[in-house]
Length: 254
Image (cartoon, rainbow, N blue to C red; front, side, top):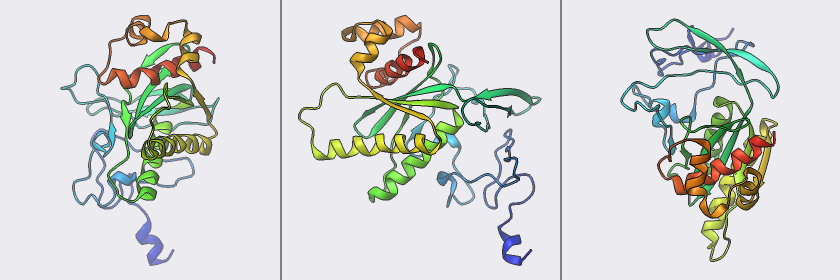
């Protein structure tokens, strides 16, 4: 082994140089022994890297007790139809091992420069406390901005065990500017390509069709959808419920 190769090897225990491992989280290495890749948000962070739920452009919802320390999960996601054992480690607790399966549906509604997200477990269980929304960072260069957005999209697909990605089509196409159309198509394409890279199913469906599938009139969905699922409305519900709507429609047909 050359000196250069030895310099590139991470230290034992999984932490990378300059990036201390978070307390209470055990890094799971792939079976081929390679060190896990470092998320782009943690690079060049100096001695104080940001926590995963503080990444630029991503808002992760905490459990109902917002004041408590969120539960950390480190998991590997298998190919569709396969399962593997993943560890959930919480500071001060004994390790709990369970099986993770890639079977969830991720609904996406793009409003402005933000992708509002909703996760559904088939057939109709809404899991809205996993991730709320994803938006590009503030890079001025479009190629860098969208590349970073796509990378964060891919990590969400992996971390949440997503099997299907479904984007809600807009209800109105009139009076669009080129900038509006470019932003929407760019973000939707990032989801499409990241799903393709993982051999996941990708759908783009209309909200009227989705409402017909679940049997609710589209004019009253803002109230009837949470009542049907027995869930509370979340922040920015007007932009988020279409993501839940299309994810539920796909999950019911799986």
